[in-house]
Amino acid sequence: MKMNNRFIYGIFSIILAAIIAFIAIPAVTSKTSRTCEVVRIKTFISRGEPITEENVELVEVGEYNMPLNVARTLQDVIGTYAASDLYPGDYILSDKVSSKPLSSDLALNSIPDGKLAISITTQTLATALSDKLQRGDIIRLYHYDQQNVLEPVTDIPELRFLKVLSVTDADGLDIDYTTPPEEDEQRQQTATITVLASPEQAMLLTRYENEGVLHVALINRGNDTLSNELLKRQDEILTALYAEVPEEDLGETEDGTAAGTETSE
Image (cartoon, rainbow, N blue to C red; front, top):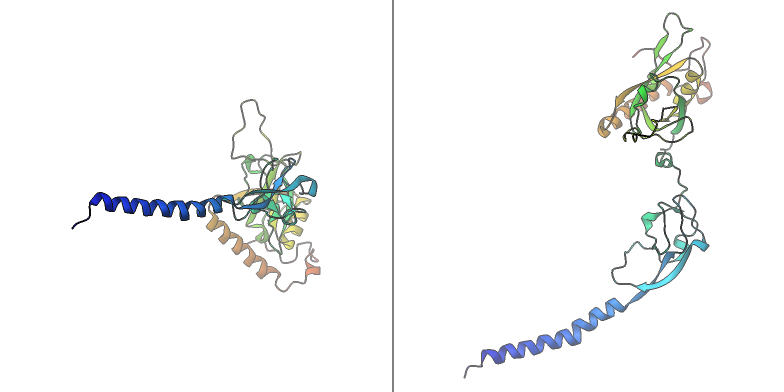
């Protein structure tokens, strides 16, 4: 005798309901009711400010769907620095804090070993590339010395490929020429350019800025592959020029030129 189809479906329905009621629901309930302690912001913290014990608190919250990188203990965050503005009620994720102090210019937080940041003054609109420089540009510097009658303009091998870290106005405020100014906003003018340099390049920049005028020429913008290639080429030039020159002899030679400096390629 064949069993009625409705009877079979009824049995399956009862079994399925039992599984849901006695296994699935308790498992989900157990998972969602689980709690854990996390760090929560109590007071507003501006970007770059250190996080103190007064700024944070431990709270118990539901563990379900909680990010894995959320701070779980006060020791994880006290003494670190806010990588962005933090507001009361925020949970602290690992990418919202920094173990190192932050500056207003993020490029200054990641200067490679053996390099340094140095600023040069732009004396005219023309020497500053008509106020069109941007962070990340690769530039070449030419030196003009009116005292040198025979060769007033010099192409300096050490300063052929430099990376711009920031462009600032006369008040030291960063300039972003990628965004056009508002109608009632006065356009900022370039006063200084901060570049990534080696110690040898920094010495030459300091010297040439005080002995004439430095003119900026744009070599590359927006092509990261080419930028890295040009910077590598500059490092090779520096290695060839200064490999055998002791650090204490990187000043001027007897004829008044910088040690290791050439005037042509």
